[in-house]
Image (tube, rainbow, N blue to C red; front, side, top):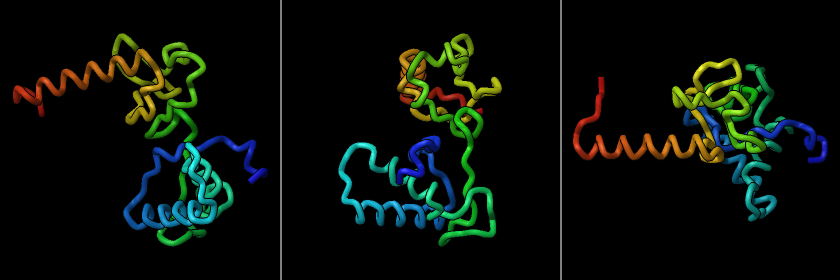
Length: 150
């Protein structure tokens, strides 16, 4: 695994695909567990990155090299894709990174667009408080049957 030590960490918590591709991916993840019997926190992250960087899931952006039902792999850089993985930005608040607009209560990608999905938002105190407040509002509206579905 040492050839992969300097590669960027890809978050295993935001893996997407069709059912057949996810089943192929999960079989590969289980095989890694079976081979290593790893029980430490974060094993899934290690397995995920090893499978990706070793090419066991196929080649990146190459539709001709496939593994099982996985026909194509696509990895977005942090803050540039559909899922914004925020956990690695813990060294300072997201607002200081320019990744959170507190006035609009939006998590942002690096280009200033709204992040469709903010993964690991709870790592940021201000964003976590905002999301919990929104959740509480939603639950209250739900109980009262006053959700605006338009």
